[in-house]
Image 1 (tube, rainbow, N blue to C red):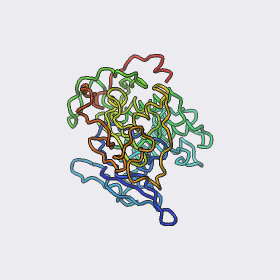
Image 2 (tube, helix red, strand yellow):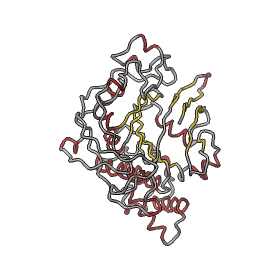
Image 3 (cartoon, one colour):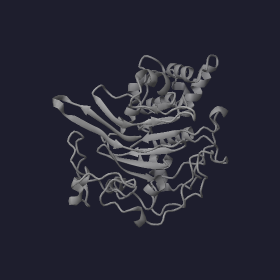
Image 4 (cartoon, rainbow, N blue to C red):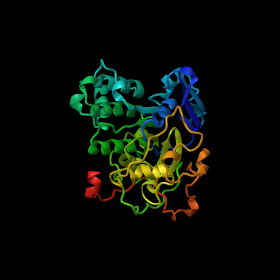
Length: 384
């Protein structure tokens, strides 16, 4: 993704800049967690990648989806509806929607929708179709005795699990999960994000990393700060041979920083439509911590940290300042902040410390192909 921008035309010639100049890359076998306050443009970014924006949206920049070695990348922002509907959505890019009740067909049961999706995306036919639909439901912890219910008969959490099950069916190379843990209790949150992790890195822990990835370095030592939540244990679930060594990618949009720490390899922080920091997840949640003032305050607002709210309110996306949008809420703001900071060295802040001034970096984390080793859980982590 290079310079992705989305703005909406409003009445009276006004524009709302929902996403501005978003640039990052997502590798096979990697999870990038996109975090930030509500209304900052995270979901709009995901919708742009699937061609799901309303008619008054204008996009700029590029978003290339790589294919096989002998195929050209697909430019998602300019792809027509025929290509998106027949070859991209569900097959190469899956979506766990933020509002699952709006994406489930209200007059069909969950089983009927799962069976149709399995048939269309995998080619499974009867009599195996019913069993395949049950297995798809189980991947998202959707109870089998609820499969014959209609969407209006489901709780918010069950609807979320049904939508997740549908998104996982196609084993898409890129999965966009927009608030996939909404309405779930903590045990189901952990099970859901662990399943998403399995989806992108199905190779068992004892196998070597795929040849397209760098060799796996030694695991990092625990962070000096108390972590928000403990990492997921290595999965023991086996996948079909056809997908056993196939690395995929996950873009997880979430407010749940506990879930983000559990599953993410990197974290991208968005504020007022702009990405203001991209960081390694272990560095972000541990030491040295975030470099952008907003990202630090976002973590400090958690009950597991100092529980200190961020003062003020985010700006309106239709009335953004010329300079740094966070400056009115920032205790480090100076006259320099009247100029818009560019994303340099993975941070967009005039006052962010250079990497050279940070504490010595710890060894790099394991790749996604080699899941992180389990850590002992504490009572605090269990109740977080």
